[in-house]
Length: 384
Ligand SMILES: *Cc1c(COP(=O)(O)O)cnc(C)c1O
Image 1 (cartoon, rainbow, N blue to C red):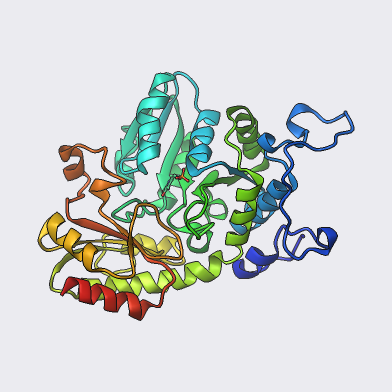
Image 2: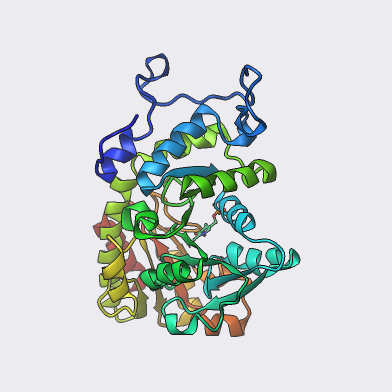
């Protein structure tokens, strides 16, 4: 369904929907069919087939996502990593160079460092908050500049305007992983990025029950990525499409609560005697606070903090917490806690951890949709 420009909450429910509903159905049914009848004159990439990401379940998701992202076109993929790897492989070939911020999601970091390297694609990392250092890293084969809206686990906000300007000036494709912010807190395409990626496993779906990815941008770039995805095969199956579609309808509701709740939690934790440091861009003392205020509509549901007493004290706190679940991943309705050195950053050496400012005792929290008072009471008890 085409709508006049509406708010994100309305678009999340109504944009892209097939109306009147198929068979009168209010919710989009699942089309569990690998192939579809065909009249013979469609080209290969237009034949309806699950791997080609063009079943009715894909179509509605693409339409809804494009509206939410304020983009011409969008595409879903079998996981966040399928979206990321396929996008990078679409715009980089042997001899090319990719610039990226130094602290990236582990899978992306490893893909750039090892897998792309094997294809003869070189890389250089930069501090995304210090644009004066970027030109020294750029080469005449730099094709892509890749950043994340809020980095894991310290919640660094890059100088997003400088990234867009730098890429325009040098004819580089700007790509941003917006997973931690979601479209509720930042809209990269209207802002000026070429492509936005999400691990829809996280906030987009929000219910910790599927893995999925998405890409949005110009129709031309999305068509090029779809072509690559059709061949690499990173499709999203119709049942997962259905679940993602359902989850996305409540994204604005969930995220607005999570923004508020995480900020209250960050303020509470910052006041605790046994907490040494809280990383959350919504706190006025955060080194990212000014950039967050300039660029983001909300500061998200993620925070991290250090407890006095290091890893042992953090583990003791985990064993006392009653509501949060100790697990990696993020962005779901339930609050999750993890120590990044044992999960997302387990692959880093002691020197790399130190350089990245990630201590053994650092705790990362993905704040869910529980009542904030209950979470605060639980943390207060566990820290006492
Ligand atoms: C989880 C995550 C990914 C990878 O997504 P998957 O759905 O697990 O493949 C990429 N980027 C960020 C920021 C993530 O948090």
